[in-house]
Image (tube, rainbow, N blue to C red):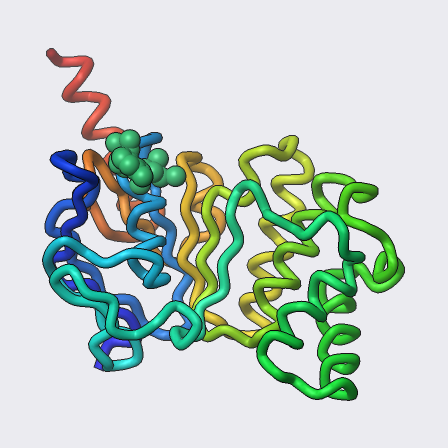
Length: 240
Ligand code: ADP
Ligand code: MG
């Protein structure tokens, strides 16, 4: 049984095909990176996995169970044990850092003492303990990023989806947060699906790279395989 399985998944927006015949198995504990240029369908694949929309055709299985198929979402997003971090973070500006995390736990009906415990644990994991009572707008980009990560992980998701989460940050900070994401993933053991258009970032984070072009999978393999794919591609372009 595959942990995550996409079988011939296609998605269209009106007449436009955004994802075409996408087939991929992901094992528990992998860090899979979807790598490709803007518009190639990366975000659409994440939204399909999260159950935020249904595939036009094809099926998605989670934990061995049929989650979405042929225009239907069968397993609702809130039942998928999936956490999400998007580029625009979407932290709640009127709540403190702690409030942002607490909101998630309250919505899940986690009792107060348990909430307190999990919030401190998570803030310490992302080294943000001293910012518990600060509002997100007063934080730097990197700090906001860590809060978004903490908020996504506090409900103990089995799968974390990250959509170009570090694209807006300067290089130094980007590097530091990559290390933090990898460290957290090693420590907690969630399965990571990470989207980027940056090759170097992809190779650093991914235990497996999926190169996408025009809504399709162009290559699946290691960072070395991906590099070989790109050198072949560029030598073909040079030859032409
Ligand atoms: P990526 O994340 O790789 O940039 P997307 O998944 O966002 O790609 O988009 C894939 C294709 O689908 C693009 O051509 C995009 O313009 C189109 N698209 C994405 N979202 C919508 C939408 N809500 N309505 C219409 N077209 C969309
Ligand atoms: Mg996108």
